[in-house]
Image (cartoon, rainbow, N blue to C red; front, side):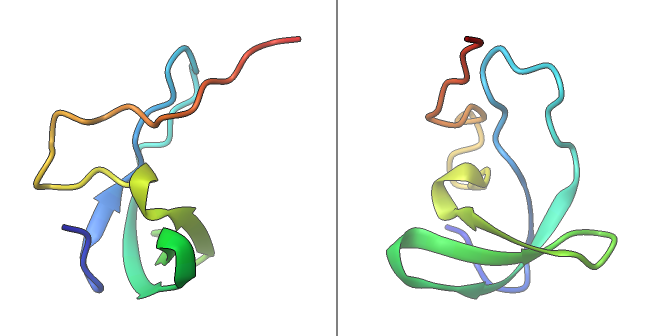
Length: 70
């Protein structure tokens, strides 16, 4: 379960070489499964909750999106 105040890493994107290894602290929840996070440098970001690695599901490390080159 994703909780306010805790830190989470982003899931990896399959076939993407530049995966983010930062830990983001969740500071709030919005509608439609959106979370507001703070990066280690203090910048704010919003992500879909599904893009954070849930400690209850540690084996689910890949996001459900695919990036293709045109």
